[in-house]
Image 1 (spheres, helix red, strand yellow):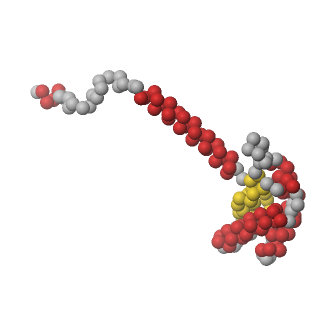
Image 2: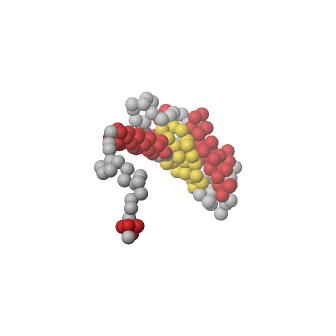
Length: 150
């Protein structure tokens, strides 16, 4: 069982090494638009999960996530060797690549917030000309209760 601070430092270093290797050493064109967002290492330092996102070429085209996943899987051995050489740990952790869903989740939340703002604006438009159903302000004047009259 390793120190949690050591695991975090190793995870950060693994993310840096993998990102640098993808940029400079791995020559697969499918990996040109990949960004490493995070890495997590298990407490025993045996397994590392590397999170990545894929940027699209244009706004209107979806990125090739299946091709990127296949390219990362094929480059896993080279990347693990590079991580082992540059970290100097006794046991090089196995690498698992997981697509990071944070950008899609953020986009979905932004869409939900925009719809909520539109709904709030619609309610405000409807309430602008509305009047109370009963008296204009039934609580303004104190009412005489039946107990006070006796």
